[in-house]
Image 1 (cartoon, rainbow, N blue to C red):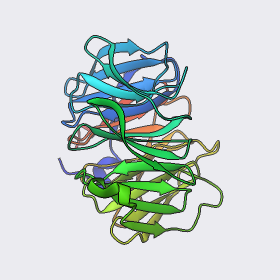
Image 2 (image 1 turned 90 degrees about the horizontal axis):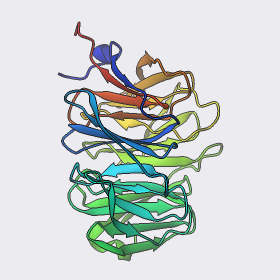
Image 3 (image 1 turned 135 degrees about the vertical axis):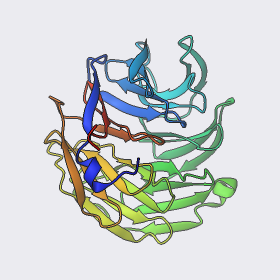
Length: 313
């Protein structure tokens, strides 16, 4: 089913899960779109089947806490960062709830964690002003970039380059095969005056980069020229939270939560608001994630909601 401005506005919450007791801090889908995973400040991890719309398992990480959870390329495994003890990244078997490997090196909170779309490489960035490259098969850091400022990071959809958003003003592009030579391109943007970049992501077609912030706008940037295509505005962020936005799989729309308890959507072609969705969330939510393969949108406060097209469409 094609995603259009008309049917976005008619999306309905088809399923609501109340497994978590505190704020959901991350949502992630498997590459095939059949599974989703969520993690929460209550140190729980929940797995969902997107085909049947049911919860399949609940796990806990009481010792280390859990944030920024991501599937590996197997739906039986995931990586996540820690909220207690230290800032080690952990590789978890979801099948038997045992840790496979630990990735130590960051000295402060990890703020970016992302899997390569093509192999077992993953990337992390931290408040210690470093970006690290890792391989699931080795506990040793495969690459280290020490920066002057903190940064967020993301892989492009082909897994050939990664981007670093540094000091809320520079986007640096690195070739994975020669990242040690420094960025091959740096885009200078006007530094954010009243907010910070909190995450970044490439559109699925690789043509745009979305810079998420803790303010009341996001920047949509041309991935080839560095030009700001649009500032996406209209949503609310009263308490200046880090809002996690998401592209639709066709790259035509961006979705973002708002402190007025609505989901806002923008057209990436025009930069204008395409639709708003009223939610059943009773507390402010920071997470939305669009399924990479199917017409399913997830939003989460402590409850997790699955949104689908209206049956009338």
